[in-house]
Length: 293
Length: 231
Ligand SMILES: Nc1ncnc2c1ncn2[C@@H]1O[C@H](COP(=O)(O)OP(=O)(O)OP(=O)(O)O)[C@@H](O)[C@H]1O
Ligand SMILES: [Mg+2]
Image 1 (cartoon, each protein chain N blue to C red):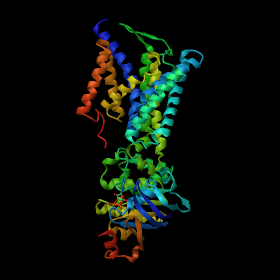
Image 2: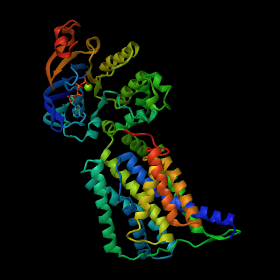
Image 3: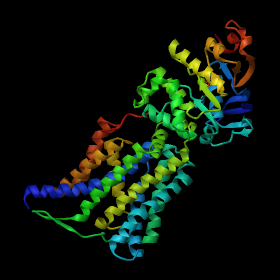
Image 4: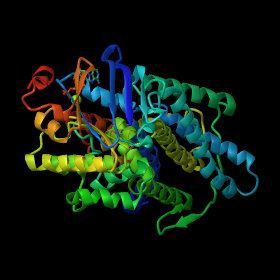
């Protein structure tokens, strides 16, 4: 293949990575932005979404598209419910102390992984894609499903943005983020907002996982990479800044696609880590973050 | 009417309020005065449920409100203007107002009547509230609390750092509210302001109310102010 088409292919692969990463990282960013909780279990919620998608594919009869549609709706809801439960049962009791919640979410990560290991087993298992359309470009054919993943991610992220900026629930979340005591003085049930935000963050990771699992297979340890990359994206973009998260996801996703295609996936990770180091040194609040107290 | 009896409260190990009692009556402004650190703000936070009373009782009419989760206190009709305003700074004027209205599910009628009190806010609905001037911010903090149509209004040093014309506007607003039957607790450091709007004045020392007087019985030269407020 010539260079031009090869680059196009790399960019398209990168775009898929970026889309899934943007979904996952925006969940992490949302939770940190509003609750000031660094959720180390975020990758485990991602994994749970993929594993549950596999179970759904087993249980729901009929064509793969039906099972997939069910998974896309039901899995994020289940994962969100588990997250809300974890918030109320664990994080709330710790009074959302930053250090304590990091340790607690590490514990949660292991609990979820071990639970997946015992219920799902140690093997990687494939989930069929809802459809198999190949888009024939002049130079190469490309998976129509991958492009659908990008479109779905854009729609979900647009939805998140609309919720945050243009609904009462979003207004309540933003007010809670700014000042939780004053939010309470105006009738906002902060506990409920936190449970909802934690559920929403986990749900976003689960949506990302359901979307990617037909490409990647479900495995009980699959949460590690998305967690690491999400942290990278969130640090580069600025913790809590949704816009920064999106830009950084695009940056990391596309460069990952290009560098992995032309050189090696390991080099892509090394460069991403270097960028994080540079950002931490020269702009610790991230590209779009504001310095918070 | 809001009644506090024998309230103890504090932060962790540190006790601040010690057997505090006071009463805010309908259609009246109760001024609370005392030195820095006397516990005036802590008293208001305790009413709002942000600081827990470890003993004593807080009654709104006949309902006990101490022990309620903090977010349920305002829903009983207690509007709060915290010290330093505490606006939702990144939100617009309209959004701050919206949150006030949401507290007790009030609608456009209440919004309009509140904005009629502060026409300057109406011109700035889309502005991010942390970019307002100090006086405008204070108007917004009061407007946000009035969006609850409160039975009880708690004001913590609302005139701190404002110019005279703004102070007069806030004073007139507080006085006008009396006619609507609101019970107001006004924490105030300035003697002239306390005397001009207060019906009664409570003096706080060391976390307790040590004396409550009708404002009419006091003048700016009264020894009470020198003793309890240090002016
Ligand atoms: N969050 C807190 N944690 C610990 N101690 C606190 C806290 N807030 C206030 N205090 C202490 O409680 C005491 C009373 O404070 P408070 O703010 O109620 O005083 P105040 O009468 O409102 O004073 P000022 O006139 O300066 O506003 C002070 O000694 C203060 O240091
Ligand atoms: Mg104070």
